[in-house]
Length: 250
Image (cartoon, rainbow, N blue to C red; front, top):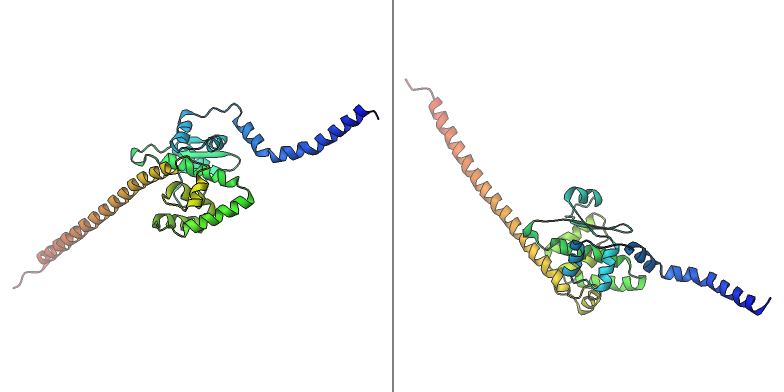
């Protein structure tokens, strides 16, 4: 065998060995490139990435999911999760992110927070085992300090429905909790350049939810009081009617 043939044989063997290895290690980048080939994010989707201060890598991850803002009927079909908790978005691995296109001005910001929440699900899926174990510890430690009963009730609902509560907390802590331990805050900085901007959206629409719940409570109380008045008036009328029905004395 000539020297050139031996060299060719060596290179060919080396390629046969290394190409599958390189392909495997770069499989995520190859998949992302395939998903993004020819993709142009709609203006509304690009604006969501800007509003939530996604880093360049997070924006890329968001676009890889081909996010779709859907009307109520289409969204309900796409996100058939069966969860009893309020669902305004869903991330389906290998398929994409779907967002309910909430247009109620009183809930401004809910789509932004949902977009960030679902993107964090996609990011959590991509964590390596060691990295994920460490992040899980940080999440557990941070959740132990959460006193917001709404969040704790939400996590309990997820737990009852068999959801991965640590995965959910990874998204909830990152988008809804203002004060986090320094190491966890540093971790979320890889995804958002200003995480508190996302939290501000959450706080704004949660205030709207709170006001609407309070209005419902007040309306229920008013209806209860009105019912009591009606019941009292009916009882009075019944008493008068019975008095007219008594036979006259002789």
